[in-house]
Length: 309
Image (cartoon, rainbow, N blue to C red; front, side, top):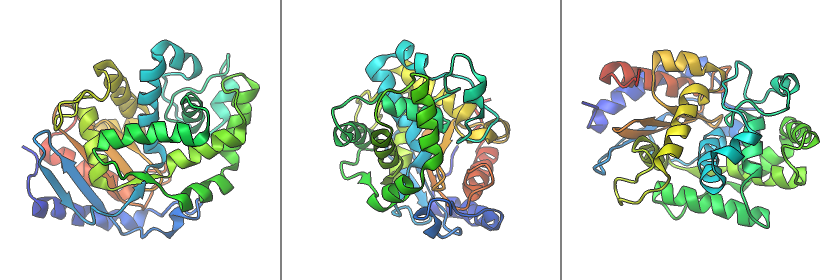
């Protein structure tokens, strides 16, 4: 049985908050550096529509790398596995999410998986449309349906901040373009990708999206199928193997919940067949994951035996 009261959940939040001192906010993106490292909020969304929240669950957070799992689902539905996985691989990496090293070692050149930046850029490149706005709107429409929230948009401040400082991502784009993985203007792709990463929502919205993944692509509240079962399964597998950057193995052993993190401090969790979790805790560890968010998930997983293993 999972916790059904806000008071119970708040106790876990209070315990996890003590770990904020071991992390720091993502100062390398100026707009994210303004966050309070002591913030921690969580929402749990059940298939029957019950929601349990603790902390400031109305605070908006940008998706950052969490958007990678959603853009992957979108392009898989549009093109199918064969086309997508010609451009990007399926293997985990022990390198940081923004590393270029493995690209130089792989022949033929192909990003190892869609959760590292090089792979995510290759996936975003595949979002179809005649302009950045049209392609962004396609992704936003999908995200709004997943979250059941038509008001979701992106933070212009964060998008601009990331666009102006994304030198390493530009390097990855040029490398990918040199080897035929992408074939569009690098600045246009960076414009789209930084806006994608700056899509913002509350941890309640995050939990609702997590619920859809947890229920194999079906929205249990509306009965609508948001994505085919096999695509939801692929996405959850990537969450387990690559979702927490190069800490995914340790996370799988200690916590064992399919999850995807972002450097804003957000974490989307999907406990298969049971519920979705949305967390926001901006204090990050050296791998780029929320220190307090991981501690909170560890407490919940151990208390309620949530590991899928």
